[in-house]
Amino acid sequence: MKQLLLYCRSGFEKECAAEIQDKAGQFGVFGYCKLKANDAFIIFEAYDGAALERFFSDFPFSKLIFVRQWALVIGDWLELPAGDRVTPVLETLRSVEEGSEISSIGELRIEYPDTNDGKELSTLARKLTVPLRQSLRQAGLMLKKENLRAPVLHMFMQSGQKALLAVSYPENNNSLENGIRRLKFPSDAPSRSTLKLEEAFLEFIPRDEWDTRLASGMRAVDLGACPGGWTYQLVKRSMMVVSIDNGAMAESLMMTGQVKHYMVDGFKYKPEKKNVYWLVCDMIEKPQRVGQLICDWLINGWCQESIFNLKLPMKKRYETVQEVLAEMQQRFDEAGIKVKFQARHLFHDREEVTVHLCKA
Ligand SMILES: C[S@@+](CC[C@H](N)C(=O)[O-])C[C@H]1O[C@@H](n2cnc3c(N)ncnc32)[C@H](O)[C@@H]1O
Image 1 (cartoon, rainbow, N blue to C red):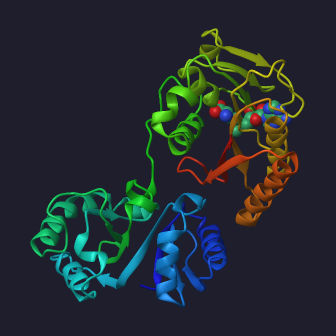
Image 2: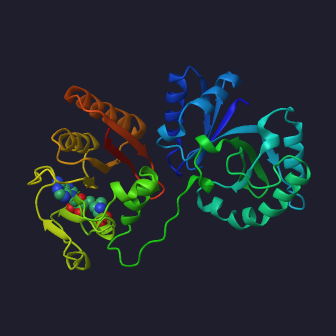
Image 3: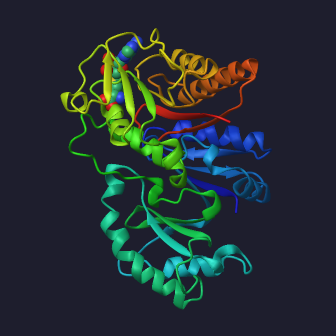
């Protein structure tokens, strides 16, 4: 297999391409990307299929930022007649050489691009899933029972008539359908931004560590807090929060007694004591400036973990993120501090990425 199918947010195809070419290149895998603006997916074609497969299994998916999902492409785009969309899939899979991973498929996902046109395919995708799964099992192309440890078959529909098949491995892919974590907006939250921090917690902090890392009673600082969507997430977890912003905080949060609101500059505020665990920051500022501020907090021991956004209104978004993260790494190296980085373009992020830092 020589091609990777990669999903991203619509409008971020160039970032997705820059990222995969950079990471694959560092791994010694070279190729080129096929993409169209706003398609919400790209294809990376490698010159060497075996090298691509090695990269796909050995490079950690979690290190990718703009790529929502990746899968190795099987065959070419399929034409799907409206009356029988199953047969072309079975034929393609049968034509793949024996002994490949295809015969041990444990899960089927019928997916589509995250675009307005793509979303119209959701009903068709749902309707097609059961009959296709049954046919795959009858044909011996899929395990009899769903197995979330076995390879995943993605049928990526670009339209009702056109689809691409691809396979990914559960130990190194996005476990969510379409690579998207949908969350319900809590009706009492002061802003939709709240979903960004909720998604970041779900993405970056393993569930079985929430009791110690997102624990009640912890102290948190929220820079650029107003009207309070991120503070809401911290308050909901029974933390004590200092919220910094010149704007107005939602009254409902102030009433909880868990929030202190200071109308000061987030770049000048310093905590009174070294008892803050979480620093979160959603200030609209130059990403380099935010990166340096977060370094100050971790290096000075003013917080233990941080989640922050890097706003990316510029053209070279991938390059900017790489530069900022490299500058931060250099500061930590100079200070002799080991910090674990995770960064992702979350589903609820727009022109920004979310970064998580944790002292190792
Ligand atoms: C995107 S909004 C934050 C939304 C917030 N996270 C929420 O969930 O409701 C950005 C905020 O950063 C604040 N801000 C920008 N620069 C700041 C600075 N230097 N100091 C403090 N706040 C700042 C703005 O006033 C604005 O309220």
